Amino acid sequence: MIPKGADIAQFIRARNRQQSKAFCSPGAQLARRLYRAQHPTEIIALKCMDGRLNLPVITTTPPGVIKPYRNVGGKFDLGWPFFGRLILDDVENAVSNGRRIVVLSTYHFSVGDKHRGCAGFAHNTKKAYESAERLRVQCEDAFGGDHFALYPIVLGIETDKNALIFHGKRARSFDVSKYLEASEEDLHRGLRETYPDMPDRLIDDLMPLVLGNQAYVREWTKHERPVKDLQHKEQIIAVGRGFDWLHLPNNALIIGPYDPRWEDAVATAGKIVLENMRAKRIPEKDGALLLVSAPFMSVGADRGVAIEKALFLGRESERVLRDRVPSIMKKMKVLVGIVDYNTRQFHVLKT
Image (cartoon, rainbow, N blue to C red; front, side):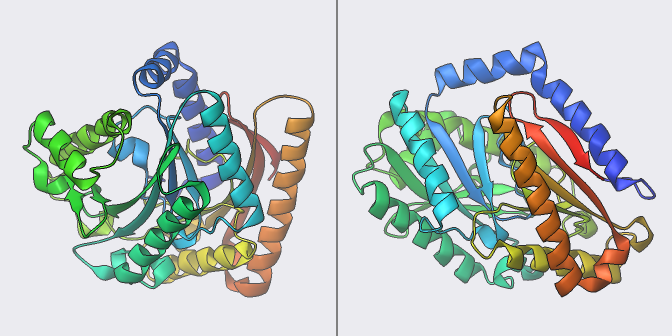
């Protein structure tokens, strides 16, 4: 959580240094290598911009294993030029290395209060699920319904308990929160019954997510959480890519630049943060932060293009907020930079 009275930009820079150091530690690096050797399936998660949806944390998997894409409401379309190209690159790279891919098309909701659910769908869980299902079908249409290389599934996330719900065909589903005392064999059987046509390798590589989530939810439910800890309290609007080091539940809205109308998501995020201030869920005097990032993998042109992307996204995001949510600009700080994917280190370009 962001401490009250903290300078948000300074807090985020310090957090990045801490997270980058942890990511680069020998133990973390070896843990990722060992995990990938034991579970070679590539896992892509398509998620809402809601910062509560942190799959590495709620599945206790090493950071850097699950590749995230984020957009408001978890809304994606393979027809979007940039997004479609990125997914195709992911698939081609995985297949070239002899790996299959599981795509997690996610939606989220709250069992305790629908208003703690997905703001991107006006808290309508049915519409959020239907959107995730459309994307699953779209992936099958594009990459083959035989699932030879890519297997898309709809994954629900219940945010009060952070529990995963795996949806199969013909109304099959597997809710981890209902199996908190189940054995590994029973969990494996439940996953297999949900996806009877899934290759054994993929089942085996999804099991760590199930076991990790079982352990996480079991620990989570031991402690009664105050309602205020479950509410939207976002103070950061993060635009771009390369934010998997943040790990700040309820504090950040993360917007990927995939939708050709991505500016709408920035405006929506601005309105959410402004409402959080007005409802006193976050301290208005501390303000908000526009955090902009573009990732790079290597020095040279790749880094150079990332710089231009970050500066562009920063300019456009400020313009959108100034034009469509002008009230928030008096309270908004800006931090623009690039992220080295090899280290997760954030390099500041503009403040």
